[in-house]
Length: 261
Image (cartoon, rainbow, N blue to C red; front, side, top):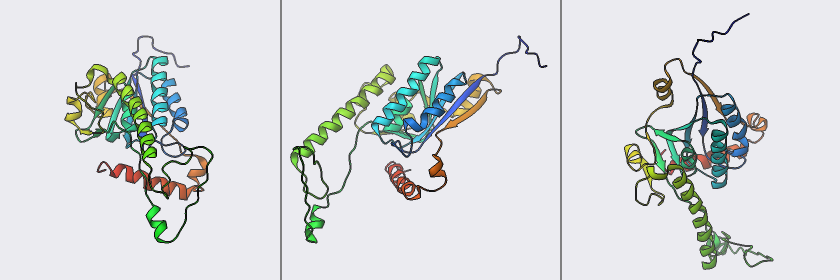
């Protein structure tokens, strides 16, 4: 029988949660997929939870759901959360980082892009050139909006911009609430990106730091680490969704490429 030494100091522990890739429903980072990892990370009663982030962003709703879950668990368990950005935490990726109590980056990390974007293609001239007629019938004047096979309509563009502005306001409110007085007194919500020290100067992050050295300096060399992350579905692991996964990989690669990654 092994007896516990009541005078022995408890070894400090840190749960590391990897948040890598695009944020999207179904594939990529999403709340449903991350929930088990986050719940386990906090349930181990660590001294801190570290979010290791490398993401170009993606779905604003999934970003909000994941960020809200992180804050809810942190408050319920009374555990501090630290974010560590690797290459990139842009757009929704920065939303996740801002959900931590403190954010640390590498001198070459890219953060920011606090904005909302909608992209698409216009193919109406292409189908006209080949004699193809687009036929659309709706019940409801706003049912068909921004059809890529029809010329853009001013009312559709106006409606889309209003939607984007609403989502952008939610993003701004989140960052303002999380970072508060740390933010520089200027407009940081233009979609601009920052690298290294500039991000520190404008209050988007708290300093330079890498996850393992940071916690060894904070808790001592004997601190223990346990890593958690979103698991792929069984179907995905066995390759039955290979075409969808290839499409997602291409989209993800293009998202990172926007920031030179």
